[in-house]
Length: 248
Image (cartoon, rainbow, N blue to C red; front, side, top):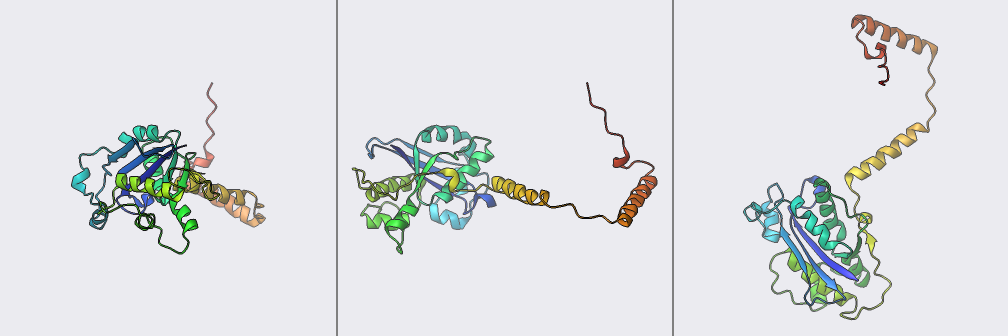
């Protein structure tokens, strides 16, 4: 199985509030080995300012990314890199939400069907009621992280690879029942898609309702009002205009 360990750094917490990706990193694991592993790494110009409180977390400032490409320019290379692989992400809904949003803004195809393993879900099953962020897991599995002073997408992807291999049996895969890749679409509900579903559900309910009864006096008053509006507009009401004849 070809696995891609993936991480992003962003301008904030929600792509649906205007936050964007500023760094993306990924590391390939083939046959559970990191030897000669390929990697994908880019800093990204988010097209907006990066708040100071976020800069303190990952160290990426506006000046650092001002000459970097926007996500749409690196997207084809990214999609090619992850093609045919299973993504492994720590807290998948967060990173997938940003990636799917960036791809949508770029007008590119989504990654809805790409299989994803969320190591945060896996860690919570293995270590309930404990801290399960990446730092805690590195400490638990004795993975060296002394060189990590700030969050960084590529470094965190490399650490995630070590954590995932340790959690799942090291170099020799340990058969377990709690590793279930799921399509990326099950982790994130994009606002545009959800609004369409909500609107469809709402109109479906309305369409099933019986039309309200109309009293004859109400109908007469309505017809009288429409006639008066038509007269006072000098015959320019839309509903009195003849329908255009079909062409051809």
